[in-house]
Image 1 (tube, rainbow, N blue to C red):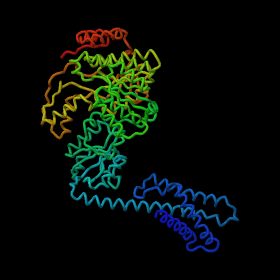
Image 2 (cartoon, helix red, strand yellow; image 1 turned 180 degrees about the horizontal axis):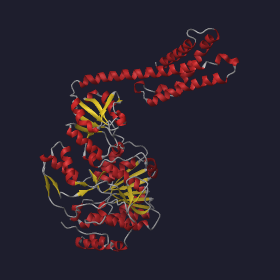
Image 3 (cartoon, one colour; image 1 turned 90 degrees about the vertical axis):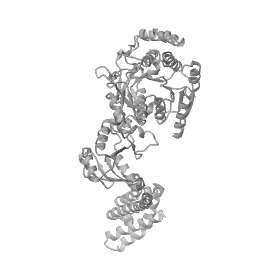
Length: 613
């Protein structure tokens, strides 16, 4: 049917061009030319449409890309006719079609072939809309403002217009770009800027606002959210850039605003370095220790998308390994071999067998005990796992000739006041000491708190708010740095391509946030007023600091070629005193002597001290 329709258009376009050129039926040689060439032109155009795969295009889904395909198919015979007109001698007048006829025929064919396809798409979409309207008649409709008239706004608007069953009626766009004002996107007008949200929403009776800015920063989202709250609008948002790395999430999956949007969503250019970074990991055998944890599992997800040959998932928790193994396999990325391994990094024989069997070329060491107050009561286990386990992984990786080794550290390793931070600092010492000995490229990456990790305060606060309070905060002035898990992991993967001789890379966490302010934000996001939920101050817990150390000091740190990744100052290089105590502190931990462990931590020259409150 498509071929027959196109043949009819080809014939009509060709004949119309002659009729217009001669203002009626041509005569003499021109009539002969029209009749003789007609079957050849139609045959050539039909063959070109077949060769350029035009007949594989489904009409109801025709897109801009398909238009370019049709253009190429139409242009090929047209160019041959033009060349014939310019090159052939006068003796072959029959084949020298006038340029005016060639031009008109090209234009008519483009209009005709594209027109019928676009009309069919419009017809099928209207039928679909009609069915959805019938379905939507029982759905309660809300009036919505779309904030952001860019590409994401266009996609969301198109989806909502087509999906009338979703019950969202768009009343207008809001955009801060003055050039967009009074313009239209999908037939919907840009009404004003974000400062005008309260006035515009009252005028139009809007009930909801959808933030359609993919790369909006946390600060920008918070400002818009406050304006929408002032206007009594329910606020939703499109996924952020890091969420879009997950192939199962699309821009049009609008969702509620969460704490990550307000505290950990960063406006960063992902696509700028992604090819360069992926090249380091593509085709490699990669081992991730602690693969079932918050950071480890996200590392596996993002590394998976970079096309490694093998991904070895190591963790001592079988449930966590089961979950991340299933998650990765459900993504259906072909060519990546996934190997889930349940093992403890304290077991050297098991680690040796793993390295001999899988021969990893790149290692991300994320396995560690991380809960600060809990480790204050379990000092020996903290050392056995975070120090002894790290020592095992580093030494066996080194002996196995691993190409790259990336150690996941923490901001708490800077002037540590708790056992967890001290053990991670010793881990850095171990990595830097080994980095001096051979060709393996070692690196350490430090960053602060990540939002949504297991054991973090945010899930606890959310549970307390859900119960009606009180929300327990240690101190009214305590501050912390925050970053979303996907962004932290993205930067870790980038930093892993830079490491060479044990450099310590620090991630720019932005500005520290008062915990009490974060709690108030969570209360508002939960639909409560701040005064409805009590905030109770319970005092600092063992090992906690009032303020985290500044990771990025412009006078001391050096920038790298990647945005938001810096190199710590040279003073971080291994202190020989720490290495001298290494075996002693592991033996003390193995003997269960917590007091002797604390004595060694204080004598190692790593800056370990306890804060008093």
